[in-house]
Length: 217
Ligand code: DX5
Ligand code: ZN
Image 1 (cartoon, rainbow, N blue to C red):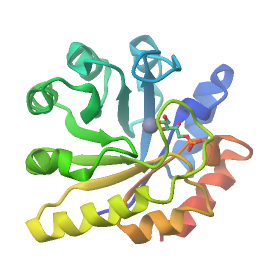
Image 2 (image 1 turned 90 degrees about the vertical axis):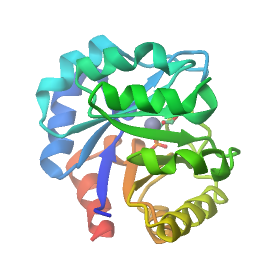
Image 3 (image 1 turned 180 degrees about the vertical axis):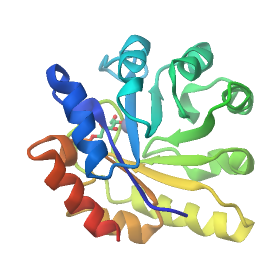
């Protein structure tokens, strides 16, 4: 699967969001990762539909919307209409995961399913053939700037093997604590969509993106 860097704008300076997205875009970001937090599924509240609508026009890159919200089916249609290209829901947050995946596709978006560190990949075995992407959380969701939890990469390699066995072509995304020190291990485990927040937006955005892309070559 093609490798892609997905900067998470959660770590951006919101006062300069447009400039910062443009910098990441021009430096070679593949997707823009958009973290929606509701203060219930995770402790933090981040941003939502109005922000997505405002920034959607800044770039043609795909918007990779990561919903850290309870009962995400309530908002799938709205996020698709606001310009989300990929909508990822947490398996743990859905009452009816299968139906929610169907809904994402009916709304014309690509469907992703996310797993928290402690959730086994077996949880989603039966829906693997209907999703476009699996997001293996490499930290507990809720905050940027955390340290990668090493055992989560074993889940990435197990999932990668499982997909190969089943002949499934899907993207494997990692999110949390990815930087120039940890990216190699994530790629080696089989991840091809790499989310990075702090490692992109803290400091020189262009140089940061280039350093991560260099590792992805
Ligand atoms: C965590 C979010 C991540 C976060 C990653 O709950 O889903 O996307 O922004 O931030 P870093 O790369 O700083 O760990
Ligand atoms: Zn995320």
